[in-house]
Amino acid sequence: MSTQSITIDRHSSREQREAALKAIYHQILERQPYDSEHHLLAKIEKEFLNGRLGVRHFIGELTTSQVYLDQFYENASNSKFIESCMKHLLGRVAKDNDEVRHYADMLMFHARFNKL
Image: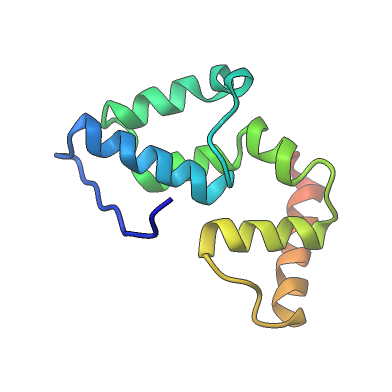
């Protein structure tokens, strides 16, 4: 897959949004969704392709979806989940252990008061 930037806005064509969708899945899931996962993502994918959901909101919905959580959260340690999130969302690794600890504290706080 190309590392070329893809830019879309509210005036982007369906074809441009489809290309962006493939790139988002590649960055966030490290693959395209399996056929068995499409029903879980159908609503947000349709809203994105129809221009009713922007990139930021689509990524937010995707990373809190059962598809993402099953792959990167459910069977991973907190530090591995944080590493995955940083890679997928920020495109980088943690600067140091302090940064990982900071996000681990946030994750534990969130898990204490909310269910992921």
